[in-house]
Length: 60
Image (cartoon, rainbow, N blue to C red; front, side):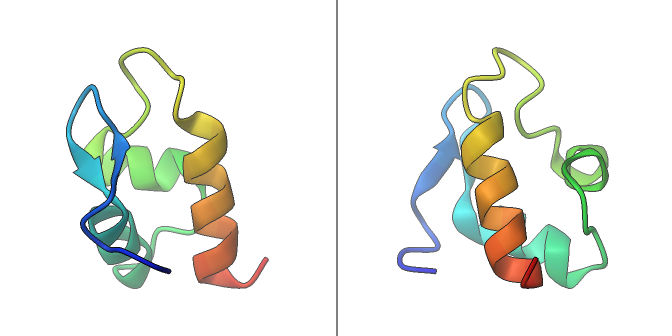
Protein backbone atom coordinates (compact mmCIF):
# COMPACT_ATOMS: atom_id res chain seq x y z
CA UNK A 1 0.00 0.00 0.00
CA UNK A 2 1.56 3.24 -1.12
CA UNK A 3 0.05 6.15 0.80
CA UNK A 4 -2.17 5.43 3.82
CA UNK A 5 -3.43 9.03 3.73
CA UNK A 6 -4.76 8.71 0.16
CA UNK A 7 -8.51 9.31 0.10
CA UNK A 8 -10.41 6.34 -1.34
CA UNK A 9 -13.95 7.48 -0.55
CA UNK A 10 -14.25 11.20 -1.16
CA UNK A 11 -17.87 11.30 0.03
CA UNK A 12 -16.83 10.32 3.56
CA UNK A 13 -13.10 11.21 3.46
CA UNK A 14 -12.10 7.59 4.09
CA UNK A 15 -8.42 6.85 3.50
CA UNK A 16 -6.48 3.74 2.55
CA UNK A 17 -5.21 3.68 6.12
CA UNK A 18 -8.74 3.61 7.53
CA UNK A 19 -9.61 0.67 5.29
CA UNK A 20 -6.40 -1.10 6.30
CA UNK A 21 -7.29 -0.55 9.96
CA UNK A 22 -10.71 -2.16 9.37
CA UNK A 23 -9.03 -5.17 7.71
CA UNK A 24 -6.51 -5.38 10.55
CA UNK A 25 -9.47 -5.49 12.95
CA UNK A 26 -10.92 -8.53 11.21
CA UNK A 27 -12.96 -7.22 8.27
CA UNK A 28 -12.40 -9.41 5.22
CA UNK A 29 -15.19 -8.35 2.86
CA UNK A 30 -16.57 -5.09 1.51
CA UNK A 31 -19.66 -5.50 3.66
CA UNK A 32 -17.59 -6.02 6.82
CA UNK A 33 -15.46 -2.95 6.07
CA UNK A 34 -18.65 -0.96 5.43
CA UNK A 35 -19.99 -1.99 8.85
CA UNK A 36 -16.90 -0.41 10.41
CA UNK A 37 -16.58 2.82 8.41
CA UNK A 38 -19.46 3.06 5.85
CA UNK A 39 -17.04 3.33 2.91
CA UNK A 40 -18.80 3.38 -0.45
CA UNK A 41 -22.29 3.81 0.94
CA UNK A 42 -23.02 7.29 -0.42
CA UNK A 43 -22.40 7.32 -4.20
CA UNK A 44 -20.66 3.97 -4.62
CA UNK A 45 -18.05 5.17 -7.12
CA UNK A 46 -15.20 3.89 -4.92
CA UNK A 47 -16.53 0.34 -4.45
CA UNK A 48 -14.18 -1.22 -7.02
CA UNK A 49 -11.15 0.53 -5.50
CA UNK A 50 -12.19 -0.55 -2.01
CA UNK A 51 -12.67 -4.16 -3.11
CA UNK A 52 -9.26 -4.14 -4.82
CA UNK A 53 -7.61 -2.72 -1.70
CA UNK A 54 -9.29 -5.31 0.54
CA UNK A 55 -8.08 -8.06 -1.81
CA UNK A 56 -4.56 -6.64 -1.71
CA UNK A 57 -4.57 -6.39 2.09
CA UNK A 58 -6.03 -9.85 2.66
CA UNK A 59 -3.95 -11.54 -0.04
CA UNK A 60 -7.02 -12.72 -1.97
